[in-house]
Length: 201
Image 1 (cartoon, rainbow, N blue to C red):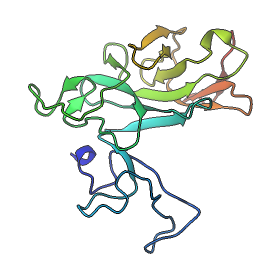
Image 2 (cartoon, rainbow, N blue to C red; image 1 turned 45 degrees about the vertical axis):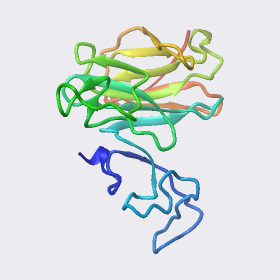
Image 3 (cartoon, rainbow, N blue to C red; image 1 turned 60 degrees about the vertical axis):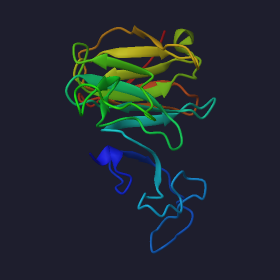
């Protein structure tokens, strides 16, 4: 239940000021954090909460949007767009499904994922990046992510207020653990075979 407790840092996205110190810490709390100065025990470091196990988050270099992949528990892997102060549901919900309780959960104030997939397609999501490079025009503006266990890679198309859609890229047999971008915003990923792979058309 850490995700729903604002008195702990577990299950959260945190935001701190590393250029200042405060209250004996080697960082400070930004004044505009959602719970900065809270008197109910909420930690000021918290930017967003209700997450289970975020595995990689990234900023879209064009608009600053924060994309996060959140690894599921029993059945669902999810992709979230993180916004200040929002509650992403765990452990009340797993993706769009009730989790605790299994039925009839109260979804008031909870933010649903942009996209989810079941464990029929993979069991451990690895977050990536919105592609802003030039070498692969077909991926331009799409969020690229993968599944560690199935080796699948997807390209997600998203527009505010519309349902997200995904296309599966050529399937790999790799355990994809992380993505990265270079100075030109070209996209790479790494796997447990010790290699770095790049995307090309």
